[in-house]
Length: 158
Image 1: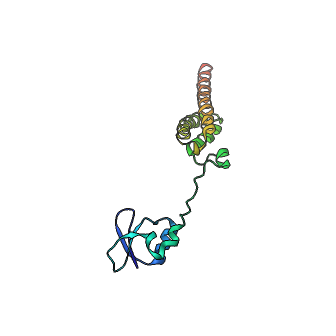
Image 2: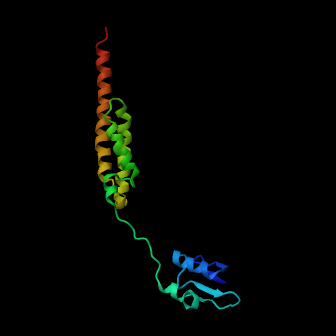
Image 3: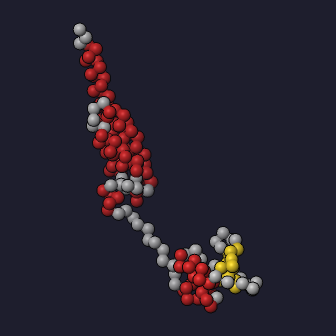
């Protein structure tokens, strides 16, 4: 059984050797982690203890960060505002409803564009631009259509 000092500076234990090997494999401990066998008072690195010399020699396998995968370039699922803004802009082509959806698409497109520029791995810059341009045009176009219709009906009263 062993006691260790964790990364937070607190003492943990007693812990079995098998549990410590598991922590080494998970990356929760390393060769520099201070440890002492139960019944002793001397702290020493895990790599200097005979039970852990071999596991400490093998560096832990860390997951490699992924840049942008090809699916995220087609459907920017990491940039939700850009994606939702894009779909709102497409549905803003529906008359009258397009006033509200166009405004939503414009706002979400701006948020998505800012997010894509801050973190390029999220993708979605093209979707954000479609939300901004198409959403703005459809929102204004639908609003102009409604205003024109109201004015036309008010002129031709019987």
